[in-house]
Length: 452
Length: 73
Image (cartoon, rainbow over all chains, first blue to last red; front, side, top):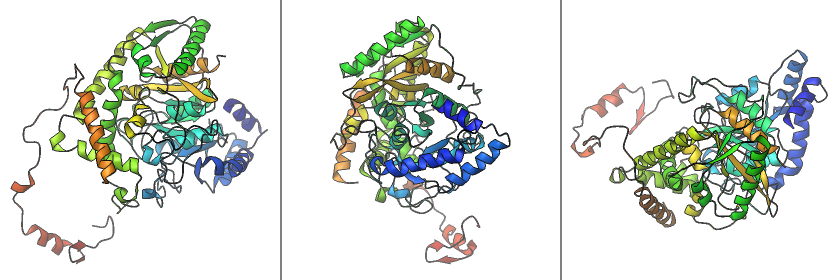
């Protein structure tokens, strides 16, 4: 547990250097079977020694001595920022992302860079140019994506906290598949400066950890306004790590979301967990209408394709690595091609603009729902994760995000905590809160995570 | 673009277009429609001396390339 470890480091029972050494040993033994890490920081032990000296001089950093791992689309000085792609295989970060600066300021030690779906284009953890990631909790299913390495590293005990990025479910989906906690913050809660974007109007960096406290603490550190990301809002950052009981709240259930969940066993697990929460907190369950949620996938992907096409024009083989179209994998090329097609004048008004209009409708659905409820609860995935190597069509894989995409389109916050298992496969529950109500979200996540 | 990817893209676009067209209540709330927002490259007059001036201003050039250290010109 992160809180316990921080106390041990603060009291001197465990040094930062020993913490890092322990993780490096475990990584040495386990990573070859999981493929979570692509690169280890050669200065991690030296950085830890520095933190130990600072702690002895009274340094009280919130993350002091903890081993933090980064998804490989987050820039850190001197570290390979490959996005798990051959396109950027030789690219080394020349600056720290805003969140990396904040992590270092609070004494967090960057232990390494994590594997992921190539350029965050994926839901399974199988599209990396450097080999697929294995789910350490349940190797017979995929770890989920695209923050596959982040989820796998946490689940396998290879780091204290991992950072991932979530555009349409890329933190929540792997958190559920690997049985850990993860948060997609509200759009604009966390600076995107230093994140190699998949879709600039949807991306958010978020924490992944084995417990809610670790996620809350990391979110508290990385949130806030940034001079370098004009979309990072100046909404005050609350003390997310001070987790409190929710008390009696109104919990929204969407019949439309229930219809999208195709596996009744997943629904049963979510319903059971919700019933326990309602009973424990004396909360109220209310139906909420999310009328346009069934169009979320068809609204989301045109936005992603067009923004991704735009965002990848810089990978032209001159300044950064190789020309992307000549070096990327199939899914990345598919998204670039689709974005290129959809942006053409002949398709004007049919895709991107239409998708933005539907996005507005979905956001409006959530705004109305949150007039009657405090949080909304739903499953994370519509069906069980697939087996590694399964042949599914692109449209089948996109449909896997049907329940995580809506919160992304609405720009609100959502988190996942473990809820149960089906034949050994971890199943998460998704809790959704209004924009910039991360404190409420975290309190609710904590409450759910403690239920039997 | 391989044939498979072309086929995938066409299929995805067809299915998305069909679904999005069913969205009732979708309204245009932003931007403004301009009839002539797209550039028609064929009708632009070009300055024929521009190329000559560019190369004469450049510190060094070879064939059609200007050779310069990044951020120094």
